[in-house]
Image 1 (cartoon, one colour):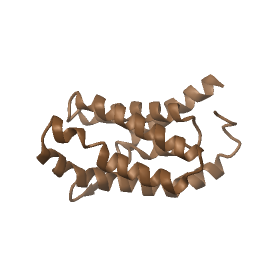
Image 2 (cartoon, helix red, strand yellow; image 1 turned 60 degrees about the horizontal axis):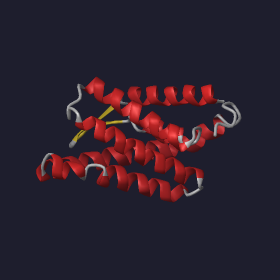
Image 3 (cartoon, one colour; image 1 turned 180 degrees about the vertical axis):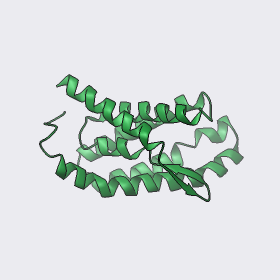
Image 4 (cartoon, helix red, strand yellow; image 1 turned 135 degrees about the vertical axis):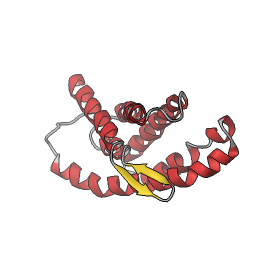
Length: 161
């Protein structure tokens, strides 16, 4: 059972890294679908493993992009781990509307907040719209795919708790 959890965690982390390659051009920069696999992992993995997959996936995606924020990506990865852990807990508790609201607010507004103090208020104000749009796009894609994927994969992965 432990090997199955680790394998699925590695699979979803790799899919997060691949999602970083899928860029959607926008007026506020390019948006990536790197969080969608981590959100989908909530249907298959325990919350801790979902957090680990999102953290690992973010670091791999940031590495591909050349670590534009340098060591701050470690902070972002930790934030992602916590946010996706809570998201998965809400998913397992059956709070299906609340998990999406939490994810958009936590990832789109609260996660960039430390950069207000660490970098500058101007960076925060400039980054929040792009992060909020990227969060919303990831949430919409995952919310459409999640029920279909869960239904299609029902019984194939076994019970991974």
